[in-house]
Image 1: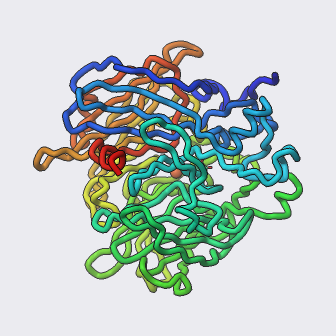
Image 2: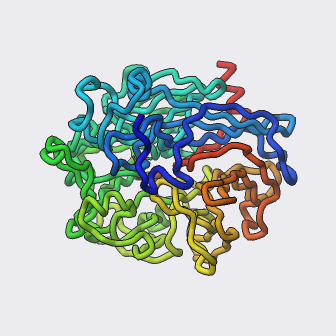
Length: 489
Ligand code: V55
Ligand code: FE
């Protein structure tokens, strides 16, 4: 069999593992707070077979659902399973890769023409008692939260018309509704976007389609109490290029970004589009809210060009990861306005987390991953963009006051989950995976728990995971009482 390409997408931390396993009673150093009872689900891309093309991206790795389960008795179990997508099943049956380039079916083996290509590798979404594994190029797959068995492609009981679903759904803390969207909703390179609402129980109650200004990368979106806000960044798709076997995305540095704003229960025909700066890109939005004057503030990890090296390479943009300028910035605009005001909030980074209760509301704390400016030695290579983060930041976005947890050399951190505390006035806990390089090709992994209001003090507990782990993309915390309630249905 062919081997995996000798690129950062498949080496170092990103070396494919491809093993399904269960480990019970993990070793704990420190005390796990009693608040932490439930499942930390993580989406882990891990290609089961060497790709058809050597320049393949880590973003095409087969999705695995991983769970760190914090049990009632204080013990912790670890499990990881492949999502049994149609693609994974077809390739496993053939014993080799059959699907070609990232989001280009014209590069596939003819034997899989028409087969669902999504790899379900981006976000585990827990809502309405169901666990979904989402990736923006297709519909989500539903997975059993207890057995981690794949139930199948999920279309909300036949109701969803969109062929795609974002990996970034937003849940309103008061109504329990899940707001989401799908872009390229009716096919490759389409400008059609589906805007959807599922009620608290998970039933799809609204799906409205609208046209984006162009087919651009729309990785995330946000809601406020009264609005839905859609970003369009100038990383664009072209059907003719796809037909010629080319790349899905090219970043156009000279093209404007856009923000689409509509009342969140309104008519998508009334979408108001506001032109933003040229050439910029953001994958993740920390939060968005309206102030007392009705002005909207959107906090996001903005970069001057696309943050993915494989997209820049395909676009003729020759910039190293470390050269790219960006930061946590606030875009402020009126819902019916035509101008965006940009305010810097914090240093560059990504993979933000807020308290669930703050979703779409004014807020005073958020967390994200960054680079410690004092760090000695190079960062670990690997993860979805090829270079990992080595610091955790807590920021008050109103004052821009910050606290940092800087990791020792040769450590990397993945996106944290936030877990609320039952203690009065307690800021809750953050839970995240730490990778450590122990030798040239030797990596060790732990889960750390920190007090969300005192991150620089370091972990109150470390949980050893005695097996190689491939880096995750996003995670999701599901409290035990919600898992129990769903199991009882
Ligand atoms: C992202 C991740 C993806 C993808 C597109 O984080 C964008 C951004 C893990 O897959 O396909
Ligand atoms: Fe994402």
